[in-house]
Image 1 (cartoon, rainbow, N blue to C red):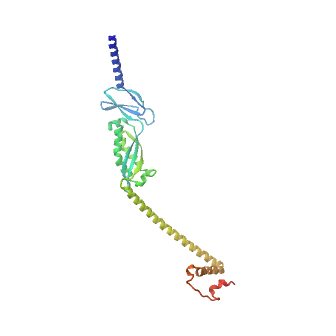
Image 2: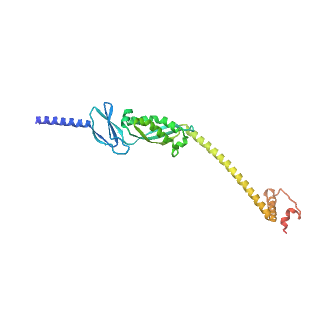
Image 3: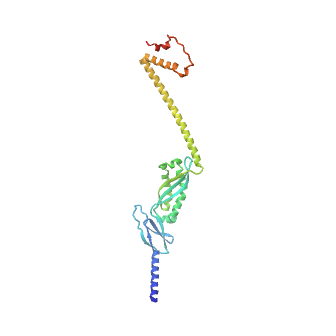
Length: 279
């Protein structure tokens, strides 16, 4: 029995060693990752490589030499990161703190491994250049345009510039967008003051415009009234005389300002009172 027990222990040891060796030789590559097999520091093959047509690159079990070959994992799908609080001084010299999100994919994992090592390091490198590129591209438009829909096309040019930096790393930048914006400390009060000044300027301009429009309307109304009276005088002189007399009477006799302070003495044959005599 002791001999059998020793044989069993030896068999278990052998099976364990084989299982360990198989574990070191076999790796599962998921569909969401690209596997770069590196031998002696050099990439030798890629498993489940991303393809532009969207086809599967062949994930699953792969075999590699233990201790001689290592596997580096690269994301096969889209990778996103955010460069937070990037200070952008727009064309109007007004500063804005912008949170800028970028999305990219790795189309050449071998190039990425050779240049930076892995996806995390690639993300760090792209984030590090975002600030300078953002100021270069977004600084060409007024700061207010950055937070409006479309951003004046500024983020499209930023995506192009970031993509040019990413291509040597085997990366394609597919999207860049603004996810947040704020004012630097100390700028908020100045912004309020500028807004108040602008509102006051607009109010003065609108008041001036209203006054000019009112004067124009009044002038046109007086001109129309004079024209109508002129036409009436030509068509019915007697009625025109009556109308003018009524206006004069109202001005002289019905004006509250004249009550108790003005005395008018007229004779019964006064020409001024002829409209009261009738025919």
